[in-house]
Length: 361
Image 1 (cartoon, rainbow, N blue to C red):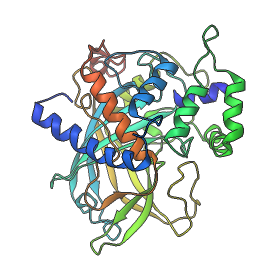
Image 2: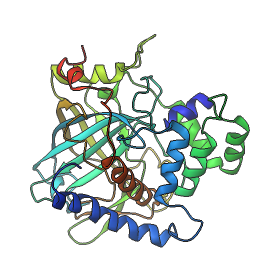
Image 3: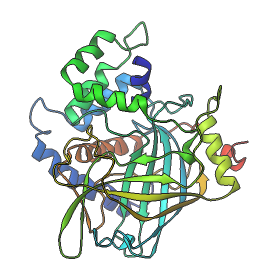
């Protein structure tokens, strides 16, 4: 269980462009954070989370404070038109939106070794022709581990390595799980999930609930999933290596396109929208909203995703936040992380430009 828990946790440009990319989402996040009481005395702030990440994975200047090991990808999204009754967002129509994305492993260590059970993420910036972009960070786990930002902070500290042993304190973790049965249940679902052989044939879930708003103003709670068109295979016996997951991704992209279907799950009355630890029933209606196609990988050392915060509150008209508290917390924390790393000297990334050029060979 301890190993599972540790695995589970484990903008450049002109000044004007930076102001638009960072300040606008930060202002939206600040409104949510203030409403939640984050800025009251003795309450959580984004700085608190920087401290928490440092306690778990140490200091790594120039890198993202979480999901630090990653690689940039690019391609496009083709809307199918099937989601337009749910959302008026232009990208759901039958048009093509350019995409910049990132695959990464959870955790703040940028040189961590790859392993089959580590949580993988897909982050995307979808850019439709009308300029109303959509950003998301989705993960290959079925539910989130905690209900809110305060619980995330407490859980992160509970799983931090103890000086001298380098391992978490079982008593501290046990005390947290005793107080939070929802996290204990979420960890069980995470442990039971089917692992795949790599990034390219994995399924990625939004975890959080959002609202799709249609042309008439009707709002529908949704979650979504990127389902691979690649053949799903389990990890090979004995498979491993420092960067083997990324090497396999680079090889796959060097050989051709990779594709996922964006499947939107439509919520019904009673489905929890404010609790990302709770799964929705499997029989909920699903809408095939379109196809994501990825064609190219680039190192974060100069790659197109390096200066992007995949802020989940950067939403197009037709997509809105729900009462789920996690996206607002992520938005504020991402902004703080970006501010810090922008002023730091970054060492070379684990996935170098040379590794990308070689196609993972």
